[in-house]
Amino acid sequence: MSLVRYEPWGLFNQLSRELGHRHHHAAEQTKNERAAASHDWTPAVDIKETDTAFHIVADVPGVDPKDIEIHMENGTLTIKGERESKKEDTKEGYKRVERSYGSFYRSFNMPDTADAEKIAAKSHNGVLEVTIPKQEKVQARKIEVQH
Image (cartoon, rainbow, N blue to C red):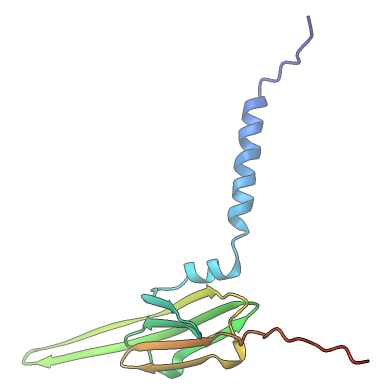
């Protein structure tokens, strides 16, 4: 027969360690996840891949193109911006003003084939189009040995 040490708080301590471990991982969210969580709205996005490029189309109504920032760093494409719109309606006896505003943030992990140097973006009628060309494939070539 073996002796077993009685620990009345053993299960409680184990639960505490597990909860602390989960809290630690939750606190280590990436910078992008925290930034996305702190923004006011998220534009709808369509992503399409063709043989030569990746295409991202985002609905950004009311956002002035000069208020949009696009960055590519360490394989992550980031799109962020801010909108402010104001609608006034003045009629007999009343004046109504509606405003909607807020910032947005989206990020996308891009494959190694994305060519960060040739990214192009345009905005028209509240639709942002970002084109990320693919890098040209390196063609295998035969090297002759000279004698």
